[in-house]
Image (tube, one colour):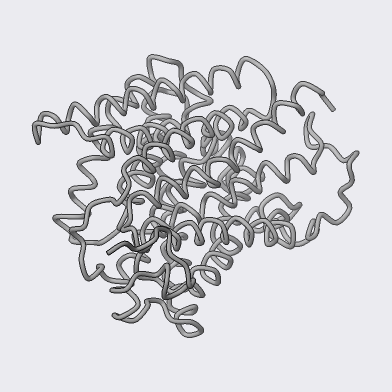
Length: 393
């Protein structure tokens, strides 16, 4: 065990959990109507709790077990069987590696929340998220990070898929799943209401930005120069994408908005995630500059042209950002074109099939969408019996 590596990953684990609680909760919560903000908080909080338990029971074993097929890690490490405080993964205690990866298993299904806010049933959220993490996310983790079929020596040859911190594993899977759930749900009854608290959105985005240093820097799994470079390029991409998004808004609409600028931040963060261990500051500058414009245009495509109510633009920002960053690894010569594109296709098809099947299956058990009266009155009071704000006359 290396003490410095262990200390850094302990900090990184806390930072990645901070991304979901409270970062993502505030970012998403500020974007919805006042009568639905608590439901967003509840979704994020409950998902964090449920994924933690499921990751212990089976998720970690499926992702990082010693399965021989390259497809499934098995259940040999279910409930952390055989793992003690002295067990090591590289230079880290394995129980710490478990905890660090658990925070990724929390935020990935939590990202999907943004697609279905203001109209989904709470029971559906829990059952779908739990099954999706175990049957979609955990196998993809095994394929790429757990020594499975998409890693080095797998189906793409000696050089496998390069995904440093989750462009495919986290952002492509969550983005595609979000888009599919949004299609099944259908649009909200009123899509024109602006965010109720842009201040929440900015604070949440800032927390995500800080937490992302653990997300990308921690994925080095060591306290070394690689972690420092990953942290640096993460910051550069986020800052550049914020500026390019704001500039593109200014060019198109004459004004740069706060919500737009911080959404650009998230686009830059998602785009640098897969590449953060393979590129330098100049490449990060390019990735961020393109991401701010690309993801903004994808928002327009999904919302206005395809008329899909992916409410908080999960696919356009996270999905497209993660896919773009994954492609740029090959463009900058840090990975194989065949592996990068092939990995995107394999994971994309798998994610789509599993997500469609789970939506249909879970909808047989618990309602997918709330009734019209509940949607009109807001999920906070109808589903959870609470209000975020006191109503004044």
